Image (cartoon, rainbow, N blue to C red; front, side, top):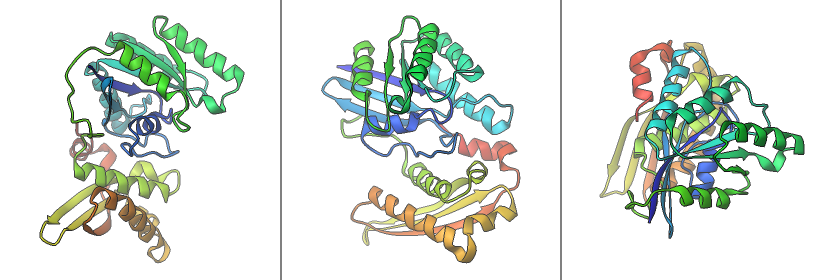
Length: 294
C-alpha cells in the first residue's frame, strides 16, 4: 500500500485547485479566474487500490511584501516542509519568470521527490509547450515532466501513476471514503467566498473574507441554521456586495445555499448572510491569524 502527502505548488492561477478537484472527483478547493483565490492549505484525499495520496492545495506563490501575501507565502513554504512529495504546476500560457525561479529554488531546497507538470496543455502552442518543458527540465533534471489539463481531465492518470510510483509504503491515514479533512465551518465559508467572488468585479475578491458567526444543527428537526458574515475592507464596499436593491447578496445567498445543501443532505437549511466592514483587515495580525489557520 502506497501512502504519501503531496504539496501542490505553483504561481497564482496555475490551475492547482482545479487539478486537485479533478483528482479527488469532488469540490475540495474553490476555483476562480481571479488570481490568489486559495488562501489556506486545502487538503484533498485520493484513494484507490494502489493506496492513498493526500494533496495539499497551496496559495499561488506571489512575490510581494504585503502582509496578506507574506502570510500566503508562509503557508506555501510550510507545506513543502511537511510533504513527502511535491507536485509543481507550471502555467504554460505564461512565460516563466522571477516567481517560477523562486518557486523552483524553494522546491529544490525541500529535498523531496518532485513531479513537474506543464498545465493547460490543451490550449498551448507547440512553442509554449517547448518553453515550459525546457524550463521544468532545467529546474528539475532528475524529475519527470508531464503535460496535463486539470480542467479537461487530460494527463491526470499519468500524474497519479507517477506519484504512486515514487510514493513510500505506508498505512492509510484516512478512511477510503474521505475526500477532504476540512471542518464544516471552513467548507461553508469557502463556498460563500467563492460565490461572492463570482458575483463581484475583479478588484473586490481580494478585499473580502468570510466568517461563520454561528452554525447550529437541530437533530430532532433535521434543521441546519448558519449565520455568516461577508467582511470587506471599507464601509463603502458593502454596497457593492449588496448590490442595487440587494440583487447581489440575494444571488450570492441563492448560489451558496444550493451548494451548501449538498453538505447536509436530507436536512433543512437556513442561511443568513450579512455584510460587514473591518477596516484594514489585510494588515491586522489578529484577523489574519483567524484566516490563515492550518
